[in-house]
Structure formats: structure tokens, C-alpha cells
Length: 439
Image (cartoon, rainbow, N blue to C red; front, side):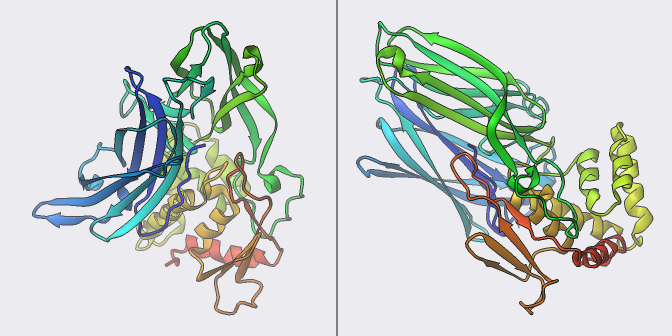
């Protein structure tokens, strides 16, 4: 499972991935990849150049011996607004020699201008090449982006996969401890049923407890898209690379299993990489279709259905522009449009799950009303206060978590407690957006 965004405003937005491998001489190492969103950094000016300075600290702890090693490097990152075509992410990747076993990898990225930092942690396991046990390492996923680098795959460290990637590469290591007992790898690509629709109005009926909008994601009875096997007959460790065409938008798992009963064992080895294919530039909003989709919160259903039926990107962009400019006062148009799509992108980073963050209940409330004055969390509930009167039922919006997170459902899925009383409040917010009154 890739990491989420977990963005805290004002801190570096990073994702990390740590995977154990063996090199060509059979020595174990961990590859650590860190992606830094350039737009989350604070830039300063030195003569004619705007740049950010970041410090990346990698700490690797051997789980068995508690031996710890730290590595630190500092990088200068140019302002992406001044260097078009460089990409939105700075990517750091490095290999570190390790002993076999499990390791805890902690990455700290510090923005040297603001002195704000972000910490991420991952676990990595690599087996002993001198005493190979039948096993599988964690699975790394990479994507091929034909617009940025059509010849090389880039590591994807998040659960989310932008659909601009046209192929996916799954890399892992398999070991076989016997030279006379082959093992069979069974690999499958599964598609899970999940709620992918934009959040309903706050005044709509609450979803029923067994409905897809309520549970969000169903792990049972997935659709099997690919199912194939590979036999390894020799003793030793063998790197595996599986390339698959990127599937359409949805929620997936690539899994590998080995039944050790073939070798006289009594267990099934299992590794999986869960992921979700989302819009082309996710979590960013750049294309006409990405700009049109969130307008469902400001339009009637029929208006939005007609808008999304426009297939040609240029025609769709013109229709989006017409919608905004026909409603907004000229002196408020640019600021309002920028604020709206900034909130959509922030919702993607704050609330991304099995569907785009802007489509979640929290994403809808965040876009329409902005950040709450305060947040009151309890065990399975959360209250967003938009007033200092905590007894006001209208301006204290309540969410409840419908199921606890788990290894294969690592989402905090909160559903808003809807009420017909929200109709006038949400209508007022829609009008404030369309009149350019949002601040």
C-alpha cells in the first residue's frame, strides 16, 4: 500500500518508499525514494533566482539489533513557476547497504527557509542471501509517464496513481531455499468495488448502512482482471519485474502468493500492492475535465451532466470559462476561480482515499465552506465548527467514521450527518461562490 498525502499546511508535502533488494553480487540493500512537492516549499530570492533549500535525513534502524544509522543531505530546488517543464516533484533516491532482516526507515524533510519539517516512516524486509528461505519481499510499483520520461519508470510511493501513467511496473524479489523443489508464483490483478461518486448535498438523505457510499469500499468478491503463474525451479534469490497496462480509474490490488505446501511447508506467503487510479494530473487540477468535474457542487445535476457530456477538451474548457464568467463579477472572477481550484487541490491532498479527496464528504464541506474554525475529534466522530457557538446545530457539521482503518482499509472514511436543515445553508454558500463573495 502506498502512503497517503497526509498534508499539514505550511510543511513540506512528501511521500516516501523503502524497499529491500539484493544487488548483482547478492548483497542486500534498501532503496529509499522520497518525492517532495515543490509547491509545498517556501522560496527565497538570491539575485535573480528563486529557490528553496531542503534537508533530507534518512535514519535506518535494524529491528533485530536496534543498530541505527543516519544519512543527511541538503538540496537546492528551483522555483517551479520560473522553470516550466521541470515537473512538480523533486525526487530523491538512494541505495543503502544493510544487513538482512527487517528495518525501520524514517525520513525527515526540513524546509530550511521556514524550518518546518515532515516525517514519514516505512518498514522494509530483506532475506539473507546466504541462507535463503522461500519468501517474497514487499512489492514496489513504478509508472511510465510518456510526457515526462517515456523511456524510464518512476517510483510511485502513494496509494494514488495519476492516469497519465500508461504502464505500471511491479518489482519484487523472490527466494527459493531448495534446488530440487520448485515454487509457483501466482500473481493476480484485482479490482475492488468502491464509491467513486462526488459527495451528495448535505441536505440529502443519509446513505443506508449497507450502501456503497456508507461503507466506501468492499474487499469481498473482487473482480479478477489478471491471473497468471510463474515457476521458479532453482535455489536462490530472483528479482521479478511485471509490467501491466495501467487500468482505468478504480481501486486495485496486485498480489503475489506462494503456496509452500509444494515444498513441504504449511503456509501461504502473500504480498500485495494496493493502489487507486485517479484523474490524469492527480492531486492537481490542470485539464479541462479536471476543472469541470468539481463544478457539480455549484451546478444543478442537469447542468453538470450536460457540461461533462462535452468530449472535446477545448470545447469543455470554453464551457467551464463561460460558467464562471457568466456568474462572477469581472473584478472578482480571477480570485474566486483560483480560490475554488486551490481548495479542490487541497481537498485532494487532505482527504484522498479510495476516491479523489474532493469527492469525499469532508472534501465537499472543505471546498464549500473552507477550513473550520476548530475541529473536535472523538472516537468515531468529528465536529467541524464554523461558529464559536458549539451548540449551534447548523454551523457545527458532524461527521462519523463508518468503519475503523485496517491493513487493507487504511482510510479514515468519514460520512457527514446530513439534514434537510442544511439546504438553505448550502444554497447560500453556492450563491456566495457564484457572486464572488468568498474570502
